[in-house]
Length: 198
Image 1 (spheres, rainbow, N blue to C red):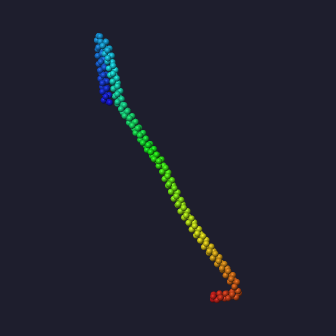
Image 2: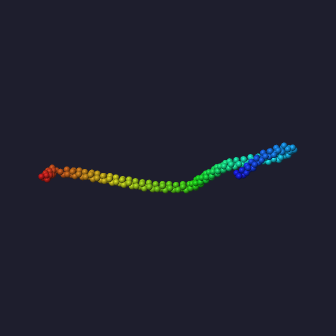
Image 3: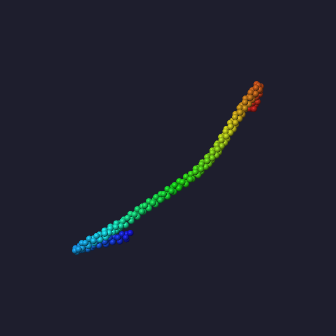
């Protein structure tokens, strides 16, 4: 494109350089008698060509500056648009991936809820069994302790009963001895005791 712009520019400059020569030639013909008629027809004839030359020069300059400045502008703009398209494509892919993950999670939600319920049922059952074992152990401990206390209380009661029975026996024996004790028996006992001391 730059080469074509340079060719158009060169043609335009050549026509521009030829214009003064044509103007001088036109003035030379104007001085000759009877050339007025010809001069006007030549000016009219070349007026379109001169306008065309001006247009070509102007178009060449515009093309040159557009080619020089518009290329980088449009390239930058195109790169920006491409970057925006790539970014929007990346964001769209990320959004689609997120949507797919959410759909997948929603599809697995029922299975996850069922798994959570099964886990919770297993945990409740295990905890119930553990509590039953702990309760049974505590009841066994309480029963063993109660049996020990009952045994101790029974033993203490038997000991108290024996002591009471012994006291009663001693009291009863003392009464029997007192009942049998006469003054002669007492003297005999005292004499027997005194002899043992000797």
